[in-house]
Image (tube, rainbow, N blue to C red; front, side, top):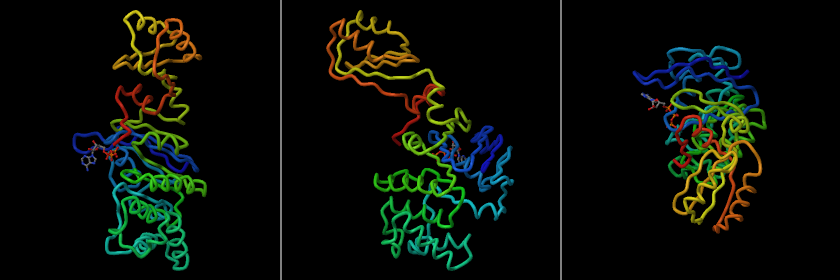
Length: 312
Ligand SMILES: Nc1ncnc2c1ncn2[C@@H]1O[C@H](COP(=O)(O)OP(=O)(O)OP(=O)(O)O)[C@@H](O)[C@H]1O
């Protein structure tokens, strides 16, 4: 086990930011810590790294208790913070070299690491630039290069794709997969459920500092009742017709607004077929019909009763 966190409690005065938060991460995982803004993701990372004191609980990394002075453990860790943390007065290359020098003392090895990291994030051509000359996405990539140049075995990434252009976002996501393929274990926080779903081998969902669910994306979706959502657009229904839909087997919910009918179904099969049969028999015309699988937002919604916003 590379990470073992037991029952962490962290308070900021009255506010309980982490409420008995536990986490286990095995070598080779890309673990997604998913939760809305303010759910405690950054606090959890900072406590795991001993950058923040916590009130209760324990953190072990690589089988050893993590402490602020645990230098041997820190050498094996890479951190990419949410806020860009680079020096304005240093060039791209000098920034990467500086951060790498904190852990890699041998000069030749360090230069090798710097070249590798610049290539890895695609900033070789910009090596002489000062950070202020870089776009937002490139700055994020520099932040990543600084965090990973020393080839850490365990990488923490705190929302590395917030406010970046789609090209940099793809570059970052592909980079994380590559790092993982090369042997790194990754802990990745995000409130973008699609990213987490695409990237992570296992997902922990946080809400108000508590773990509300944990598993692979398939396991998480198995935890909830919802199995299929079907939407019919541009449809006009009488009260009687609406009542007919309410009789459909395994129906969990029906919403009808602005000529749009949204139906949620639980376990079972052939929901679309039964629906099409009903539309045909009742001679109801419609514009478009489509079926969707549950998302992690549905999981969050069913567990907490609130939306996990994915667009901020
Ligand atoms: N230094 C602090 N002092 C007081 N409260 C804090 C402090 N840092 C965080 N908080 C509060 O603790 C809670 C958890 O914050 P945290 O930043 O860990 O959440 P998060 O999930 O990382 O959110 P975001 O995605 O917005 O960074 C929030 O309610 C936040 O307002």
